[in-house]
Amino acid sequence: MKIVISGATGFVGMRLTHELVTAGHVVTALSRDLERAARRLPARCRVVRWDAAEPFDAGVLRGADAVIHLAGEGVADRRWTAARKRAIRNSRIDTATLMVQALGQLDAAVRPRVLVSASAIGWYGDRGDTALDEYSAPGEGFLAEVCRDWERAAFDAQALGMRIAVVRIGVVLGRDGGALAPLLPLFRLGLGGRVGSGRQWFSWIHLNDLVALLRHVLDDPSARGPINGVAPAPVTNAAFTAALAHAVHRPAILPVPAALLRVLFGEMASVLLASQRVQPRAAQDLGFTFQFPTVHGALHDICAATPLHELVTEQRLSRAPDQVFPFFADPANLERLTPAFLHFHVLGASTPQLGTGTLINYALRLHGLPLRWQSRIESWEPNRKFVDLQTRGPYALWHHTHEFEPDGDGTVVRERVRYRLPLGALGDLLGGWMVRRDLETIFDFRRRRIQELIA
Image (cartoon, rainbow, N blue to C red; front, side, top):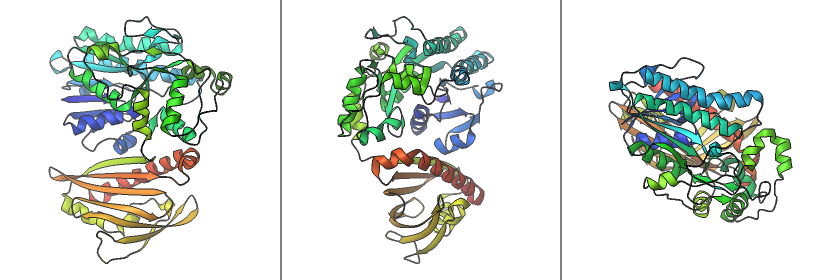
């Protein structure tokens, strides 16, 4: 299937894009930040620049089978100013309107048959203990109005004879992103607690289930209209807090008063305090099965393993693996692939030829601090794969896998870094965001240099 996706570099879109490409679909991602898209998305995904402030090229949609529209600014990541509210609204409604207008410019024979658009359970507003499903009336407030107009813009494509499905997404739970990213370090330090009274209902969904639901909606011709993207067992905020504390084996005794949230976040605090008891009636009627129907199971899956962060990047080079691998196998080339601000130098290797067990020593400066780094080659498969593991250096764990996958007359180079910061949850809380930013900067530079030197 040929699929066009907006919002592909977001927390949900990135996982969905990777799964669709792995399944063999031909995916085109729309992004205003090509560098970010190149870093986050599979090498076999075509990326086209699209900024909602510019005209939309309908030719990008020509011949596609489906469009998945996930674009939208973050809602709860900062205080709502007038400008921020405009950005939240325009990034959803204007983009959906432009998308439908572009679809209308195409002849029916080359127009996608399906549009799957994101929405949010903010559509229902703050509804207390009322059980809500897709047949419930809309709510009131800023987010309810945004969602209402967002959905209306998507449903305008029905006039083109397309199948339209709108997935009202709840709070998404997953590793290294989503709602848990700021919460987990606090809870692992025993600093978590309920929000406000804790009696407000919290409608959530595991990232794996949301991606599976989006794929189900895409494939099922009977899936149309609004579909709640939430698990079948919503919980109160107090119950969620207790479940998360249990999952990380820590107490949760520090409540966050509603008044403090309103002082800190203003109107945006309503997102954290709203009560929405939402059921996935339409998804269940479609026969969708949730892998994680309960919050305890979802949080156990996310939190059970030792905390690790992961960064994955891919790029396609026009040379065969036996021409690409030798470049990466030469430690001296690491200096050429590392930004100057790190002052990175290879000091030497324990064997003349790299192979399993080889130790490599480096010197670098990290934010002005001089460091020594030693890595060991754990696995060595010429022209296919090698793995290096930090044995001494700034990380509690650094595991770097390099894979070289034949792709026609070229090679897909895939690098996967799994890392853990020193000081555990305290390290994540104090420096996790900065380390992630630095690594993305380093790997952006690395991708560009690889392309320049051996593409």
